Image (cartoon, rainbow, N blue to C red; front, side, top):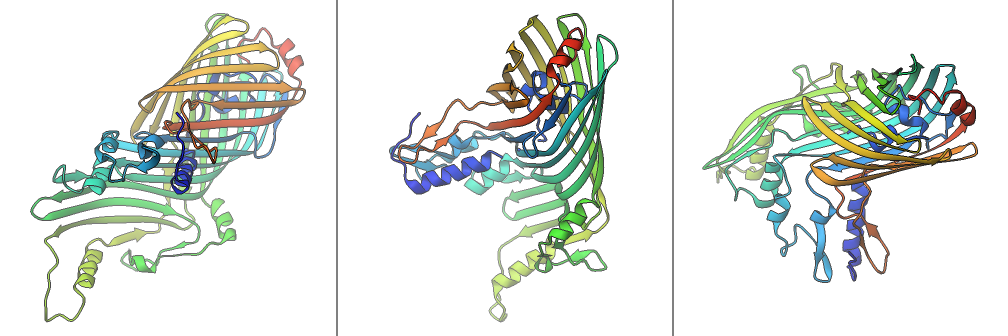
Length: 478
C-alpha cells in the first residue's frame, strides 16, 4: 500500500505515533529460545550453554531489546487514508464505531525496554558461568472498553460504565544477574540465575471499583489504591494521612535518584532444564523472573474511597462566590486522597517457557514453544512454532510463527552470524509485512502492526571450534 500526497503535519503526527508505539510485558523474544549462535539465549533458559568457550558482550549492545504490544488496535485504526489525505478516527468523516469495535472488554498496552551494560560468560568443563548487568523498563496500561466508549460517545450506548480494570504499571530497575549451568549427563542439563535488583521508579495501581451511572442522577464510585516510588516526588502528608493535590511537588535530583536505587532492593531467580528424550527429540522448560522489589526510598501508598451523586450545579444569587468554584471545591472534598509512607513490595511478571525440538538433519530442526505469563492474577499465553536452519558453523537462521495477543499474523525472523571473534545477532517475533510510505518524505510506517519487537546484540566470542569438537556428542549444548 502506497499513500501519496499526504499533508506534512498529519504525516509527522503519524510518524510520532509510530515511534511511540515502538516501545514494551517483560517480554523476551520467543524466536531466540531455540536459536543457535546467540550467547544470551540463556536469558530465556538458564540451562542453555553458549557454544563458545567464552564470550564478552559489547557494553550497551549485548543485547538491546524493545517490545511493544497493543491488544486493541494498530496505527491503521488511528490514522488512515480518506481520499488524498490522512484522517484520524476522531475526524467527522470517520466512523467512531469502527474504532470501538476493535476493543475487548479489557484491553492493554505494554512496553518493555532492556539494555545490557555488561554480559560475560565462560566455560569450565561441564559448567558454564555467566554474569550480566542490565537496565530494564517495564510498563503496562490496562483499560476497559467502557472508558474509551464514554470518552468518544458519552452515554449514548448505555447508562452504566465500568472502569474498574483500568490500571497502570511502570517499573524501572537495574539488574545484576549471575548464572550457572551444569551438564549432569549426556541427556540432562540444568541451570539457574540469581538476580539482584535495584528499583529506580515504580507506579502501580489497583483499582477495586471505578464506575459511572448516568441515569437521572449521575453517580460516580471510586475505590482505588496506587503505590508510587519516584525519587524527587514530595507529597506532604498530615498526621491523618491526608494531603492536598495542590501541595504535591517534584524536584529532579540525580544524586537522590542514585541513592534511591540502592535503597529499593529486590531478589530474583531463573530456573531451567534441557532433557534429550532421544538423539533427535529434546524437551526443555524454564521459569523466568520469579522476582520482586521492596520499595523503601520515598514510597507512597495512596488510597481513595469515595462516591458522589451529581444532581447539577446549584446557583444561589445571594452567594458572592463563584458557583463553579463551589462545585469544584465540593468535588475536591469528596474525592480526597489519603497516603501512607510505609515500604511496599511489587512482583515482576513471571514467565514459564515449555518447549520441544525435533532435529530433522544436522542443519535443520523444528521447535514448538509455549510461553505463559502470570501477572496480577492474570494469565497470558503465547505459542510459537519455529524452523531453525544452520547451513554452516558461522551462520544460523530461525523462522517462527507466533500466536499471541489474539493475532495470527506474527511472522518472526532470527539471524546470527560470526566473523572471527565478532558475533552478531538480530531477532524479532513480529516482522511487519505492511507499510505505508510517503512520496516526498520517504517515511515508512508499519501501519498494521499491533505487536512490534526487536532484539539485537554484538559479542566477542572465543574458543568456538574447540568447544564444538569437545562437546559434539552432548546434544543439549547450543
